[in-house]
Image (cartoon, rainbow, N blue to C red; front, side, top):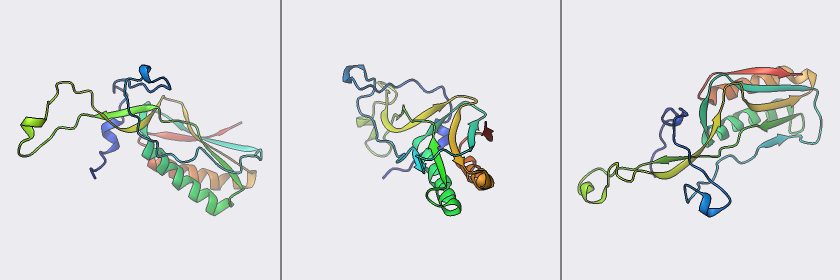
Length: 172
C-alpha cells in the first residue's frame, strides 16, 4: 500500500474545485472515496448541557478526513475517560466534501511507455477534505459546569491534531 502524503501537501486552499453530486452527470470526479470519519455526534445527545465550548480556527485551510477522525478519537477518548459516556456531548461541525486528487507518475524501468506525464493530469481521487474558513467552528463540546476544565483539556488535545492555529472559546 502506498504511503499517505503529509497534510502539508493538501493544507492550502488553492486546490481546484472537485464537485461531487447526487446526480452522476454533474459530478466532476466520477469516483468518491469513503470518509474515514465514523461519527459526528458523540456522548449524550438527548440532554441539554449548560456550558458550551467551541474549537474555532484562526486560519483558512483544508482539513483532511483522517485528521478529523484522529482529532475526534483523542477528544472523545479523553472526555469518556474523565466524564463517562453520558456526561458530555461532542459534535463535529465540519464535513469533508472536497475530493483530493493526485496525478501518479510512474518511476523505474519502462515508466516512459505507460506514463503520460502532465498531459491530461486531472488526477485520481485519494481522499477527502473539509474547507475551513477563518473563524469557523470545528468542534463543539457541551458539559455541566463542574466539568468545564475537563472539556477544555479535551479540546486542547484536538488542537494538537489540527494543521492550523485554533482557539477554544466558551459560547454563551
